[in-house]
Amino acid sequence: MDKKPFSNNKSKGSKQGKKGFKNAGFVALLVLFSLVIFAAYGQPGNLKDISTNQAVREANNGQYSKIEKKGNELTITKKGESQPSLKSTVDPNASLKEEGFNTSKFEIKYAPEASSGSLWGTLLISLLPILLIGGMLYFMLKSAQGQGNQALSFGKSRARLYGNEKDKVIFGDVAGQAEAKQDLEEVVEFLKFPKKFASLGARIPKGVLLVGPPGTGKTMLARAVAGEANVPFFSISGSEFVEMFVGVGASRVRDLFAKAKKNAPCIIFVDEIDAVGRRRGSGMGGGHDEREQTLNQILVEMDGFEQGQNVIVLAATNRADVLDPALLRPGRFDRRVGIGLPDRQDREAILKIHFKKKPVSKTVDLDALAAKSAGSSGADLANIANESAIIAARNNHPEISQHDVTEAFERVAIGPERKSKIMTESDKMTTAYHEAGHALVGHVLPDSDPVHKVTIIPRGGTGGVTWFLPPEDKVYTSLIEFKDVLARALGGRIAEEVILGRDRITTGGGNDLQKAAEIARDMVINQGMGSKLRDQVFHVDEGMMMERIVHERSYSDDTAKVIDQEVEALITEAGERARAVIKANMDKLEALKDCLLQKETVDADEVKEIFKGTTLPKAAALY
Image: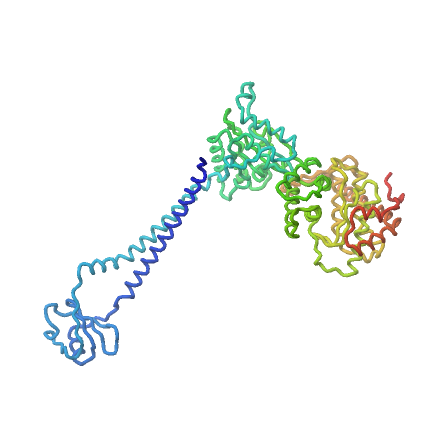
């Protein structure tokens, strides 16, 4: 029998009991407060005390309507009043006549003396304020005690423990990444069969660093290791160690590793470890920086693992270049597993997993989608599958169609359509020429990617889109391919200039120019593709901000000037090539412009049909 539901109900019932206790205490305080108010204002009070002689004189003058005697106390009601307002004292053994009262002038009422019960009631009413204050102090102290417990747990680890859930993640749930899985399968064997390796003198690796771009499945692979090994899995983010109080992060590290040793064999997974593991001595925060103290404690704990503990640290990051060298040395993170973007075969496998539990039409071609989505991560593909289901539901489709998948892919890749944005006829024509210029230059140049779609419908933050997709996955990019990319990026601005004139160019090409400048500068300073500075790189580490501020650059002002000249030359050359292509194929530019104004969106097959017979002028050829 599964005892988990019972334990969960018990904990839930205890929480409800505590909540009910708090509610009952609050109601009790309200009742006590009400009784105090009643005791203060519901009983006759604030009576004016007068002497016996004055009471006799005023009573005999007919100023009183009623006198109530209780023991030696007189409660007096004046004429015209409904409640008593005066009080006095007399001899309890003498009658009112004997005291000198003319009893014919007012009504007399005798009340019995207070009994022991009324005395207890009076005593209780007197004690109510004390009880009320005591109850309030009790709840305040209890609340303060709870805050104290939180303060005591401030230095405790906030890692979440997995491993007992029913839906464990295993390697079969993670598509692709065959090489990474192979490296991690050895970690699983270490955890499952430690004696097998210990008998040969092999020691268990203390740390495995998962390195890869965001969304490639580093966290899922770490959970798959724990699921395959069937061991507890402590998960925590690097940023959860760091607080503004110095020493808290180090305390949490000690607590986390202590828990891990008690639950060995187990896995500690630190996501985004670069948040706490950045290179020390960068000048930020000083030598006693809280982040550096936390890192120092991690280094000590990892180096202090005893043999046979069977505790492995998995960490994930997409910025391995900024990590401290002491963290990466053997004995701490013994292995580095690279997790890159999936290739076409892996993308198709990932898409099949994400579409597995969705009603999909037989017309959906996941292989074609995998081919188009080059450069997408696993998270991007999961988003495409989810967007496809959302679009199908919005359109009231019983199952996901190919049109839904295509629309979802375009929404994720280039942004949603903004058909509600109103454009004037002049803006539409300018946009049509601009996008036609991109498409024409990219189609004619031989080393450019083929055109996938051209549209003048605003998408995302752009007024129109010309979409190029590579026919296959690429590992390297050649100099000629870079130059073709630069030329097609400038094709839109050059088309505006040729058709409308230099004085009529618009801001629509601003983003294109920015991207072209970034590509050209990357070619010169990072790839060594300049003509004057050939095979020289001048890379600056973008991850270390303080080093860029404090340290001088690694090249002179003269070299910086040459770099700027190289970038300018590449941009100028790309513009001249784009201008040559557009002037040599003006009829094709006009034809695509007219088609865009009529249909707003033109697919790849239509673009190919319109561009039949285009020529590559000598001025645009590189070879």
